[in-house]
Length: 252
Ligand code: BJW
Ligand code: ZN
Image 1 (tube, rainbow, N blue to C red):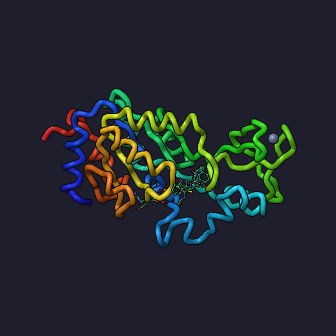
Image 2 (image 1 turned 180 degrees about the vertical axis):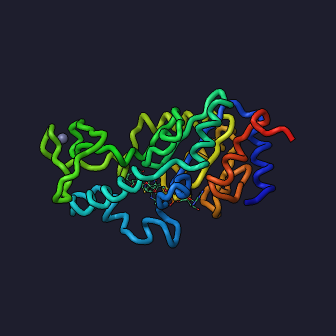
């Protein structure tokens, strides 16, 4: 971890009362949930995103996509929040507001105890009707055939309640995310490659609103150019130290 980066980021966050946080897959890496684009371990190094994470892919082969999501759902259900998730949840008490905008679909922020969370790419544990008849399920049943269950409202397929490539994000949530980011006194960006829009545009939106941006990532990202402070390290290692406020520090 870069100690210099950490000191600069801590100084930048010191007087902040309203913090916004944007998280990506790297946030959950230390919980054992694979990222998408890491070269060896990322999901897209083994699986085809067009086949598995697009509406066309699902319509082409619903059982294939459903089974892939069932596997990931099991993985997420068995994962635990890591030290980074817990540090963010704990830190909420030392800010007037701490809003987490997450691209993650795993629900680990909420399970760590964070309450102000906007899931802009949905949640993998929920399902909804492919034909948008309004039916939503918290926990879908698994059929022995591996096929997706049918929507009890209209008979169409159920699909994971996530945002696939080429799909619009929920405009209400996207607006709330933009407002959280622009209305904060600092934006902390954790564990995202910054390649997927519109989420990747939020740091620039913050910057344009005069909100300083801190980027925490073990690797360079597309967002580094808009960062006021860069911390090289992992979420689980860095966040407990970065977010410990003066009052929380042990007396030395
Ligand atoms: C660690 C770590 C540790 C590792 N600690 N860090 C404008 C420009 C160009 C393209 C577009 C654009 N606007 C829209 C597009 C098209 C497209 C897009 O962005 N494509 C790009 C890839 C080029 N966007 C869309 O289609 C979006 N829809 C949309 O814009 O609708 C309007 C529209 C429609 C049609 C045409 C045009 C406009 C929807 C995007 C939905 C993304 N969906 C997914 C799947 C979700 C469901 C599921 O989980 O299955 O969301 S794709 C995947 O990528 C997932 C993620 O949320 C998202 C972002 O990935 P993330 O989180 O950044 O992960 P990685 O793996 O990329 O990076 C991990 C990072 O962690 C790395 O930096 C590591 O170093 C780091 N790390 N260990 C801290 N321990
Ligand atoms: Zn339906």
